[in-house]
Length: 496
Image 1 (spheres, helix red, strand yellow):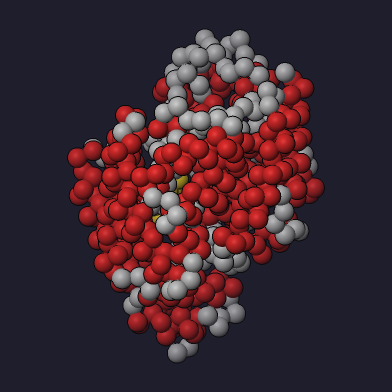
Image 2: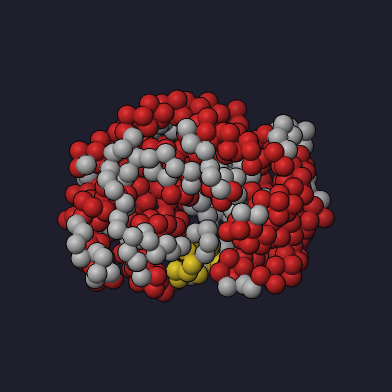
């Protein structure tokens, strides 16, 4: 079969996969935003049907011969699409379609139960929903592993080529190096912002302004609201992100918008003509998280960002924001304090939350920890790592949506994202200039241009380690991240 004919067959096959993924994403977005609680069971069935159809199409024998030819293409995008396709097909061949359907239904049910149980602190309802889900996830990992380590197989879904044996020393070493910083910097920053109220609609409008300012194209996406902020690509030209609102604190919605905005910019930065190919995405979740953490932490925690946002804050909240200056926001945002909520934690303590979750979810998959014992194990682990103990279920094991959705193996990618973001920031400052200076002089556009060129434009042509090596000139290292922490928080401490 000639290359062009093979590529035509492969692109039609990949286009159908893209359409199925987009349809599922529409249903998931609706579920997270406006679906009534009564629709949960039907939505689970709908998503399961789409997942089963995708699984069947992924294994279509007619695509196999074409992919073998495309794999030898001189075009790096075509060859990468074939590489990713063959990996996905190999995985899918190990998993029965019935398991795909059951896992999808249990995931949808778990998210629905979590959404209702978390605000009520209904631990038993949550345990009842995720116990069968974790069992199915373990079955999924075992099927994927084909005799290997099931947790490694689950990690590989999000960070291809990465194993727990590779991650564990990175996480343990980082925890050991961060813990003295926590003790040294505890108390850095300043008091929280005044409780407001900070108007709810004004916060949503400001979040939309913030992401547009950093480069989000609102003609190809929108900003919504969910309990757990998320970004979804529903197809070419339709990228959606969400934030959450706390009327007593606008920092939550602004930082969530920046974080999800980073994901959305990556999604919008993939060349449009590549979006319906399997190379038209990020190579891993660690790469994706590098973008969200870059904008959230290396841009959003700078005085220059808040100086740029100051007029919008005063216009949106004329009463409470009128008496505040830039330093008030920076000090409040960069407070170093031991607190139980991962998504609200400061940069210094954040990765300790990831270490805890990684240890617990591995134990769930190996069977060393039972789901019924997870809440107590979580509280004990937090006390051991951070020196604090959750006072309510929503501060403990129930706080994140991941386990309720059967998403296991994802948490370590947040720490990888932190490390890669710091490496990218260091490389950017060497070549473009200090981030604060660039923001003050030119705004976010040069920062986005650097990321577009070094990261977004390459899709999955390279695996993440090679992509980041070429973008930064370095292999994975924690040194830029630790230097960033010391620099940022020592500066904040001096403002106190």
